[in-house]
Image 1 (cartoon, rainbow, N blue to C red):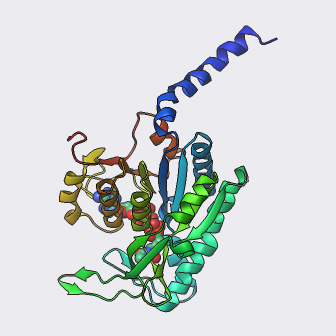
Image 2 (image 1 turned 45 degrees about the horizontal axis):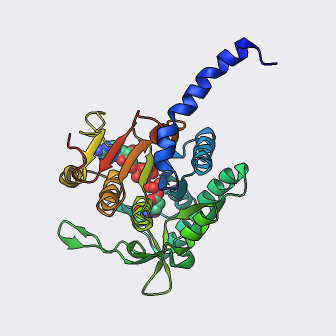
Image 3 (image 1 turned 60 degrees about the vertical axis):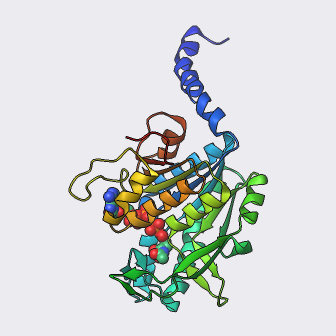
Length: 301
Ligand SMILES: Nc1ncnc2c1ncn2[C@@H]1O[C@H](COP(=O)(O)OP(=O)(O)O)[C@@H](O)[C@H]1O
Ligand SMILES: CC(=O)N[C@@H](CCC(=O)OP(=O)(O)O)C(=O)O
């Protein structure tokens, strides 16, 4: 027989579960694209908590799709190969030799590790790169810096997304884990694509409800690096005005968030991947840690 004390101590747990009901109802069957940045993969406990959260979402009836980065891991591997890491316009200058290392690290190391962690919870995760089944196709990206077009090697600009393979995996109850490498539409080789950009393009093409970008800061800082005041919510137009003032890693992230909410995604969020279970806090509570970007007309600040 259950003792009265035991019943009493279990009650708060039931309350916590029932508080999640409105969120469970709202998100049921919806696709959530989660970008896990290389800078947020700081320790084993965090990676394991990330995997638990993603599996939790899947069992709660959502359809999570993981897109992963690996910038610091690529830089370390290039260093071991005696190759230098140089960034222009926030993107890695990628020689053909560096491209081999990028592909090896993203598809052969980071993606395998995440797939392994997710699959500790059952036969759920399947890894792929943008090369598979034409998921991501790109052409050579030629950014303009100070009015000049620059050559940054094998960096791709996404030209099309084919969601077929990802949708088939989702329909089969799997968790796709995507590395940000694209097939080339021009020359039979592959391109290195920034993982934030890839995640945003996939979120838009999949008609995802949410794009969630996990990184190593609390969100978008209003006046970085002078202050750590986080902007908690902003509309697409408000973000568009801020874009020219942003620097380094935040540029592709916020451009990606803008692309997503301008192309049918309901919310795009930048959240602190260093906080354990930040995904659950964001999806199932009102606490809204980090920065949320919403389409225009959904409440100015
Ligand atoms: N306005 C800003 N707010 C927050 N971080 C910023 C801002 N501008 C630049 N950053 C930098 O962007 C970094 C996150 O991008 P990045 O290093 O590419 O991470 P990830 O590996 O998660 O993609 C932060 O650690 C910070 O140094
Ligand atoms: C073109 C380009 O810059 N590609 C990135 C791909 C990985 C990435 O974006 O990783 P994070 O999300 O951890 O930064 C790179 O080579 O670092």
